Length: 223
Image (tube, helix red, strand yellow):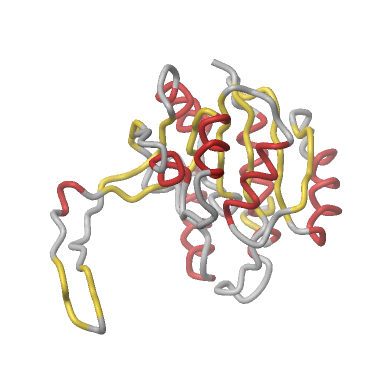
């Protein structure tokens, strides 16, 4: 199955305290690391980056520096996640699309390919990992619920889905969603779950960047 990748990279990085997507991560900018991996995925025919205007010049420079031949479009992001995903989907015409968060630079070719394979013949598939912490529902500063940890998974990206199903679901209401599986659920469509990678972390705070550097150093040392 062939798909297009939509890389969502339009956030303002307010919790990081600077532009995390251009931060150096062992010699390669955070966002560029995801683009390099997606470039190497056999099942992806093109890559669309949805980002802020101020990052366009940097991405265009990376296109030549890292030989990103599958990078077919750089489009402006929207105010909300769903607006940015919609902008990316408008720039591609494949039946399936793989949305990846540009702040997850440690994604691997193997995980992308497994998630794409998991979506084939279905409405979609997401990468996720089982929750290991005990999770509490909290309301007003008090514990209000005790979810069964055995049923909880932490969603990652990529998330692969039928492009038209996502667009149809988005038309069903204007509320934002935190991920694409939630968007498809509006139509009663369930996504398969492909076991993700605990190392596929999201860079949100400066500490996450330090952890990512340690993971890359461990990979390079063969551990």
